[in-house]
Image (cartoon, rainbow, N blue to C red; front, side, top):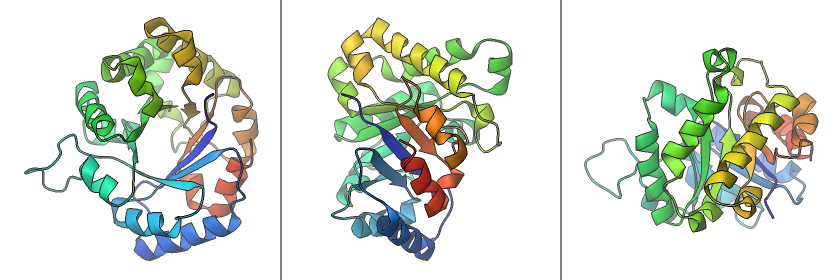
Length: 249
């Protein structure tokens, strides 16, 4: 049975001290439930966050990683490095990585392979631009991003994959896909996976919604049949907002 998940992507926010304070507050205020909670601090705060959360049910993820095990890749971090500090979940394919760092489906497929080789769990992000939505091309874009980066994998690999649909036009803009739009796309994603693999696998994959989720709209979005949680941006930096979103289930 697929999990309900709320993941907080801190992006390039919070230095070491800020991170310690935020994690400590989160651990104090978080009430354990069936919902899995994940935070993704910047690289400099991964170790301290992981240490502070030992013994809790809050997991730590990296925001990115390189596909190589080691080598002359200045400034990059490998899967093995993340695993060595107890981090075994990574976000790949975030729209900001695609837009600002030119990450392609082909590159992401290599990162996916590297993460799975190291037995890491992947939160794989994808989604359409506003122009795609306006032209009615959103399903084709989403289908292509999933197929190009993930459909080379055997069915067994999907036990380590969580999907995160993020309409790019709704990230950090204050705009949010309606709960109905989110449900429609999530249902389409699940059907796309079913067509490639099986209905059993499709029903078992958690699909998160990422796009300006806030306490005010989380409950309605999470109530939809094919929405299994959220990948939260700005609201994850505020403990009261983040815990309210977690509790929306």
